[in-house]
Amino acid sequence: METQTQFFRDTWAEINLDHLYENVKNIKGHIPEEVNVFAVVKANAYGHGDVQTSLTALAAGAHGVAVAFLDEAISLRRGGITSPILVLGATRAKDVQIAARLDISLTVFQREWLVEAGGQLSEGDHLNLHIKCDTGMGRVGVRTVEELKGIEKNIHAHPQFGLEGIFTHFATADELNDDYLDEQLKRFEHMLEQLDSLPVYIHSSNSAAALRKTNTLFNAVRVGIAMYGLTPSMEMKPELPFPLKEVFSLHARLIHTKELGAGEKISYGATYETQGTEWIGTIPIGYADGWLRKLQGQDVLVEGKRVPIVGRICMDQCMIRLPEYRPTGTRVTLIGNQGADTVSMDEIAGKLDTINYEIPCIISTRVPRIYIRNGEPTEVSNKLLSTGIQRQWENNDQFDE
Picture (cartoon, rainbow, N blue to C red):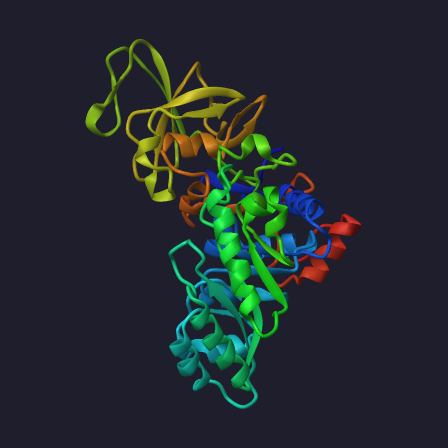
């Protein structure tokens, strides 16, 4: 497939919506039909594109979407997302009216916040709330039954509030040892027993728990990393119930090729020296794009073969050692498949001594995203509603602007 770009540099990311759709479908098929899936699209959908990802996940059967901050939720509403949206993180009490008027559900874990937030709402407003319980993550959330009961009482007492959900977050769901997860689950179940009545949504499972722990599902799950085709942890990889297909790939084109003799230096600090006659190619991607300096020595793919990055990675460019002459314009794959070989997100994470979650998030917005559907590049309008994208997907039509 030859990607035709509508931008003016030879570096881009490809977001395979077909893979995302299939991942969500498989997750839906793995859990009971009555369990709702909230697609986690915070941080611009982990760098994949929030609106495009949301539309595809909803078309594949997700019930709603979840984000970290109110700003992200507002962006989705402006982009045409009409499904339920839950803000998982903290929101300033003074900003709750905009959430109410855009039908965005917020998270609460402080009774004082409720008092202040209630004063911001007018008679015609209605704000749905999810109570966050800290059962062992140690981040934010209600820790005691007394706190929980106080918040529940305050929500029910205020005419503009609605208790829509309650949730917790597991700290070790991606580990095969379940001791701590089971302890958190017991704490959460105890908190649920203290409520006067259960809300609409009860959720505790992230991707890892949803894939491997059936007793944590309740009636909703929050699926993030697995939706993007990435395993929650290397430890879990052999335990996956079905294959995950990576959604994000990263590409560039050669902008210069030169033949150098032995003893020539490459890039800042002159840390690389040619050992003989070598072909050196330059590609227009660097640490300003999130392709960090620590990736020096990492392999990339050229015509299906691995070639190394040589010399220090610059802000906007880096160099690779080619086996022979390759012309300007030759495609270089930094993450993804080319020919019979693959550079996976996990491989890049290993080189950077981090987790795969971090990699698509750090590829900066300076790198354009191209969306792939039915194996072809397509423009996905932010104005499309999930019903429209579902119909087009089922009919195998092209997206319309």
